[in-house]
Image (cartoon, rainbow, N blue to C red; front, side):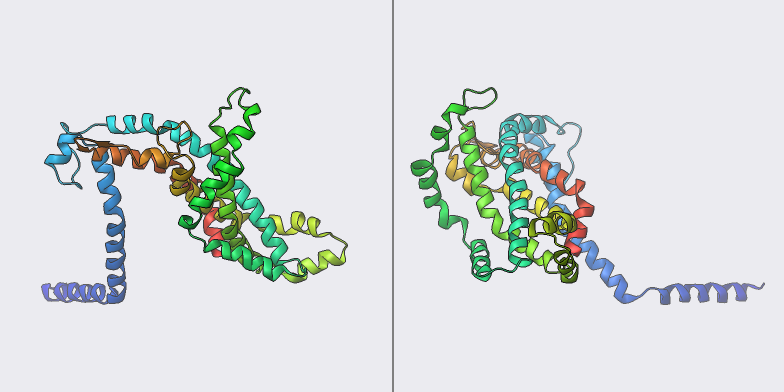
Amino acid sequence: MTETDDTADLDARLSERLTAYDPWRVGLYAVLAALVGFYLIPIETGIVTSIKTATGVVETLPYVPPGPSTFTLQNWATAFDLLVRGIVNSLIFTIPATILCAILGSTAAYGLTLVDWRGQIGVLVLFIAGIFIPYQAVIVPLSRFWSNYLDLTSLLSFLWALPVLEPYWGTLIELTITHVAYGIPICVLLFRSHYKSISTEMLEAARLDGASVTKIYYRIVLPLSRPMFAVVLIFQFTQIWNEFLFSLTLVSSASSPAASVTLILSGIGEAQTGLDFPLRMAAAFVAAIPTILIYVLFTDEFAEGVRT
């Protein structure tokens, strides 16, 4: 083979490779890469800041990793020590509130979607209207209700003599009930959208076989609701865990033994000399760990539920 043939073969292969690149696909990958960078750079900056000393934050750019002399994990250890009380309190009211929201939302949506009875449209409208009530509109009535009409800390005082239980658990129970009441409307809407896709012929066949409304729910509807339960559990857990306004209204102080993780987090790093950014960033990531774990553990179920 001559040199001319080699050059012609090389040109042909180069031309073939160039034509294989679709400009549209190249542009799409470029946009995706830009979006990934757009969303990850703030996270990378936060992580890098959290492992720097105060001197490292001043002397380096926010997104530049620390050197050996400015690297420290003490911020994470301090943040965990400061937040552990709030993490425990938030778990105490977030887990039962999330489970109750899912169970009550599922049963209510079943009764409002797959069971015919007079007046269900009016009740459904009331549930949907609950979604649009802003938190700020209920703060004053909520505070007066729990403090003047139903002070659970006083009403349940006979329980505080039991082991483990403390008087501040009354406030945690109030937070649990408040989150359940506020979370049910959106859960009903999510379950209702899922139940409208269930085959009515299958339910009608069960009714002809003599199955009761309760039996149809437990034998047919509930097993088919697992993907939507995953979506609702993840959604509600994230909402309740990150909620701040109800905690501020009912607990009021980060020094309270009933303080939630978001309430304590709001004051971490503040001092008369300025804001401790590394400690604040470390605390933010420590507070986010439970929600990240929930998403990682239920990723497949969440994706399946969103598809349905």
